[in-house]
Image (cartoon, rainbow, N blue to C red; front, side):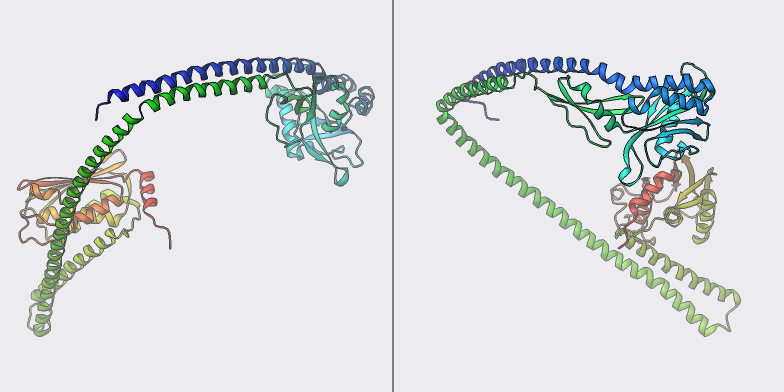
Length: 581
């Protein structure tokens, strides 16, 4: 890093001085604006508090106390004569409901039962009442919700707006429920409130009409009050507009208050002071900054020239390094390509030999059988037939490995997990492999798992048969191969251990390279695809494979598969699925 010159340091100090002047000036301006704004805000708060204080004595009787009075009249009148027709008429006369509650379309008495709320009496201003005597208030979902809530808590409740009537006579109303207890008692638990409930005084109220007739009571308020309709979005709160709500026996009322005279505001002084302060701050800043810039223009130009020269040298060095690095990468890629081509050539030669040998055995045995069938003893015939059968199986296994490798490399290897008895599967697999290897090496199986696993049986067979076959193939005849199966949480652990040739240290890093075989395998048959296929099958299960080996000391292969974690197995299956074309 190039050290800063004295001129650059001086120029930097000049810039910091200009910035310090700007910050101080802006801070003073911001404080002045904030002070004016705080004064205006406090004025607005006091004005609205005074207005709400004037509104509360008007709104509380209008929305709540009148309806509570109506409930008290109903309790004293209806219960006196046990809810008779005569007591109902006395209540209607005493309540003067149509005069005291403009907008009340109907009022009625309903008897409460746990399953039914039956209308007994009704007074209505509608030509076709919606809640005639004998009807059930519970038949309407919205009214039922209000009725049940009022029954539970023991005090009045109002519904959301619904439509009453049909056609041109339809009006938007709320249904209010005033519970009438059998005996006076304070609201208690839900069960006690319901047991003490005789019924409801219910009413249908056109809130807009009711509110309109009460408008003269609000004329002396410092703001205009408007009732929000059902579903109408309340406006944003501003200095002159305040949305608010009030809940009572008659339901939830939403209002918008608009101040008749805008509150005194310090907006103009704020903007005048703020604009002037910012302008002065910028002017001072530019004076200091311009002075520093003019003083050191020449020094800056010289520093830029030196900087450009350093950048050009650094760029040249970087380009040289990139060329060397890219050349090395190309050499490595070329060497890998040559090695891959060599391995492919060896693989083709090996596959040709592997196919040609069993074909020759099949041809020889078939010719002997066709020419000398009648002269051969039954034992000789069986021997030649076994030769043909084993040769066919050998070619079939080779072709299956090549086909499976092709599918895995193309990403088309299927994964179909299903429930599997792991202990039974492993025992059966060991028997099959002992027969397939002519019992070259005994396989010592250790499996104490009784739980059902979830795996793709076909892929799991490829994994274990390849590992056990390799252990037997690269071990001296008669040397035991240990095969253990255990469980660790949601994982199954498969360990195959032999005491055979082992893997040279230089070959271990290329174990999963297609067509690659170790230097010490000599003439032992193989394609170099076994471990590659095993790795693909393990990855399809979402598992891991680990190999530890030492030359002439044997090899231990550990495979961990999440066979007892259904959620993990299902997740792996889904991400491996391809959408249909």
